[in-house]
Image (cartoon, rainbow, N blue to C red; front, side):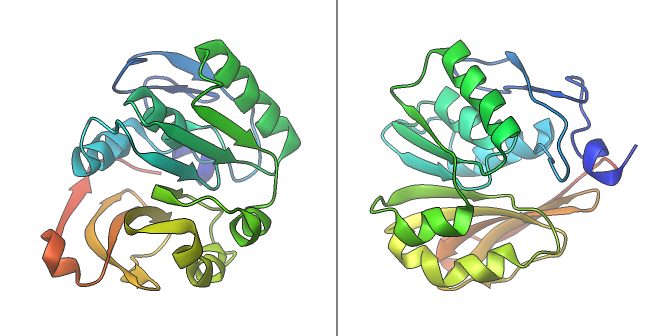
Length: 207
């Protein structure tokens, strides 16, 4: 099994994900096999939403590399007012659309079939939370850093996963971070990370 597939590692198994909190807690959704598709593991999502707060009511979220939909659908389950999910792979996007229809959340969750950079460069929308879980070793986060101010509200936060630890992205600096196996995950806030109470965590597991 490849490292990317093992990153899905939890009880839901390969090709499926489990919503871990909110309205659809324990719902299991299917997604297709695709190169580089790397769903955020359950325990990492639990940590992320402990950081963000369990209730996202009123917030707008952007899942810029939606993939399996683990992050965007988790946010919607926890009450996010609007979730935009961007996915360029037609087959993966088709599965995402099926899951959105299955959950009957088309009014709150919008699927955009587009390249991430093209969307980030052209959308007039601004968001409170952005999820960045791009394919590794392709420089995606570096390419996106200059576009973040046009995508995000002043007090917005960034969640980013990467193969290496990140100090920040543009004006947003890492305030909280953790590691699960070979995956480094970060919560970034604008300005001095000390203002948000910097912390880190290591989760057991392997990739």
